[in-house]
Image 1: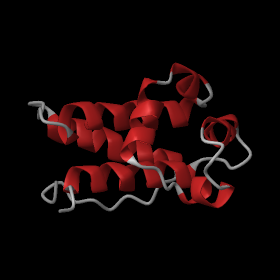
Image 2: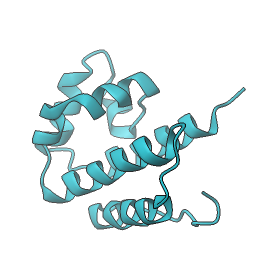
Image 3: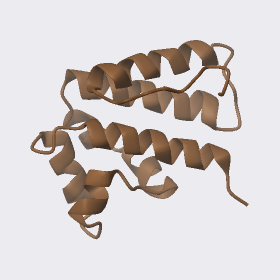
Length: 117
């Protein structure tokens, strides 16, 4: 069985990673944090659940981000913690729209419809 929550989380992480400046501190941090991943996999944003959870807990990862990256990352973490997990926050529609807006400002191509989520 495929877990749709994990699939969506991985897809969102892929969108975030693809929008990063490949010469920036945040992208370089990802390469150092996961030395076993090829640079092609990092560029493609191919991360699994445990790797994503490791990054969520990693304050140094967030410290490597610029303002736009940080806003997008924080909104992603909010959605992961308050919507994609077992608990659904009462304001989940707001969390998702905030994340989509932050991802778009970062340069992600986001076309998720709210009714889909």
